Length: 77
Image 1 (tube, rainbow, N blue to C red):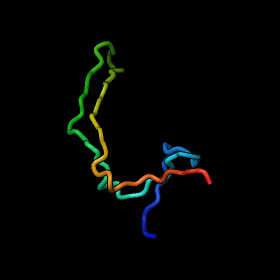
Image 2 (tube, rainbow, N blue to C red):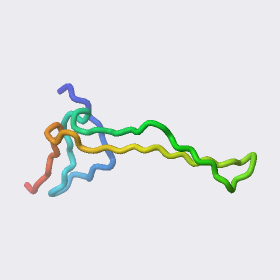
Image 3 (tube, rainbow, N blue to C red):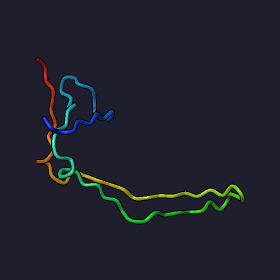
Image 4 (cartoon, rainbow, N blue to C red):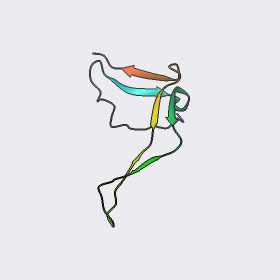
């Protein structure tokens, strides 16, 4: 039907009262927030030549438009 199909391992298996299928425009419905910059900290206890660095980056996201994505709930037959 012209729509891309993606299989996600995180979604539960099909069972009674499970929401196992999501359909919609995820680019419009979900917003990913990617902060600029990466924080780098040097480990003060490591010595040369084995210096350790710790890096962190802030990334988040959430639903932007609830009408853009629909979940299919399975019931009993």
